[in-house]
Length: 151
Image (cartoon, rainbow, N blue to C red; front, side):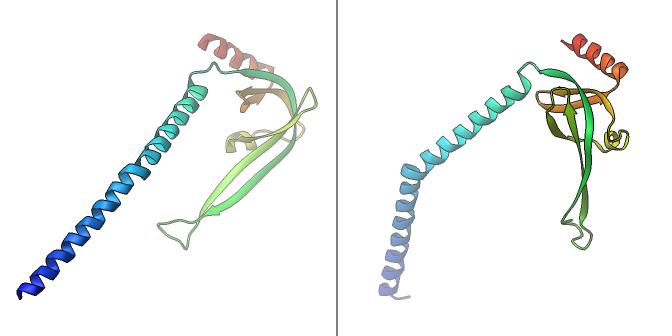
C-alpha cells in the first residue's frame, strides 16, 4: 500500500468511528432515558397488577343460578414442530342466569362442562368475578366451610 492509500483508509476509519460516536451519543442522550422510563413504568404496572391479584382479599360471591347455555369453541394453532398437524384447542363456556336476572358467561374446565347440563340449577360461586364452582347445596356448603377456614 502506498502512503496515500494508508491516509485514505485512516481517514475513512476515523470518519466511521466519529459517526458511530455521534449515534451513540444521540442514543444515550435522547432514546435511552425514554426506554428506561418506559421500562420503569412497565415494571410499576406489573407490580400494581401483582398486588391487585395476590395481595387483595378475595371476594367470594354465592348466587342461586341456572345454566342457560353451554358451548364448546374449537380452534387450531400452528404446531411449530409439525406444521402439517396443527394443535387443537378446546375452550368450554357456560352461561348462567342468576337469581337477580343477570346472565354471564364463564370459561370452565372440560370436566365441569361434561358433568353439568342445560337448565341445571344450583349455587354459583365466583371469586373476584371469575368462575369458581357451581353445584348443589352440599358441595357449596363444603366450599364455604373451606373458604372460611382459609380466612
